[in-house]
Image (cartoon, rainbow, N blue to C red; front, side, top):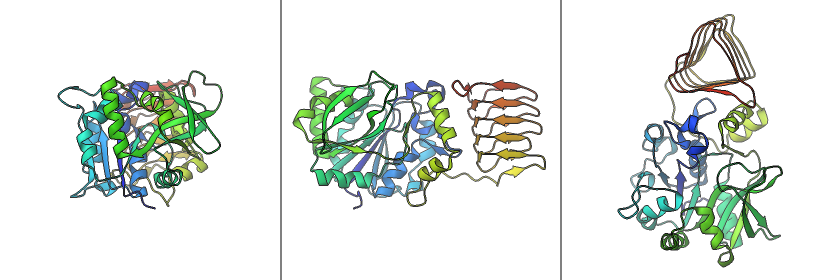
Length: 370
């Protein structure tokens, strides 16, 4: 059952404030991940794999990198004469001005939603690393005759603002939602993926505007008793990006074959913008162990338990361990790097030593020279 009757909507800026280091000059959706991808690639590819042909991406600020990455949507076969990919503006309408949340973003673009011929709308953020079968989620919604389906995973909640958990009955219906205030045990935690009928969303948005409700969690919680709301359980690997530490952990999780094979399986690929780089070059004394190395790298030193993005240079005698090294970073001769995240275009001089900890990695901003 292809989800061709679904309008996909992605919030690219949701939770930018939780990782200010990584989102100072970009959206959450355009945060680099796994050597060659961006976080938006996961929901966007999931939608395309499910058969969704119309996708709107909400922006708010710092969206130049996002625009450069998604372009006209051709990578995801969304460069279409009709439907396809639309980048929705960082403002809503003349009344509300700049968007200050998901509800105002939706309400400000309600014309775009109303003009769609789709019966369903799928709402999702970009900060969840997982692989959600949106086609199966639609099938579940139809089988349950649901008004709303909210995806959840059985996991320890993230520390994101207004993280919610669900109480679910034996039929899968959500009977209660709670804002999380305890982070020491696994709960039925929302992953902020919602599927509902388009006409219902329009009605709820008008209600929210009249009552000045600004967040999605409150909007759906207030209507829980009046609607058939069901929970769709997400199995497999699920990780919320809620901080630099969680980004670091999710990145290094990719070095586990079971995680990597689950996220990047051939049956539902993750698409991304390709780069014209030469194959990576390894010097005669190079040593690389338990690492992911993208194309265009030049490695002459030692790399262990790392993610290297495109175009990274590790000079002779340098040792890099337990680190995330983003695009076009240069690490000088005999430098020692451990538990470090470098953003793009960083230069670390020869014989420098930078050492963080697994629970407190050092972050080096874009273009910084050390």
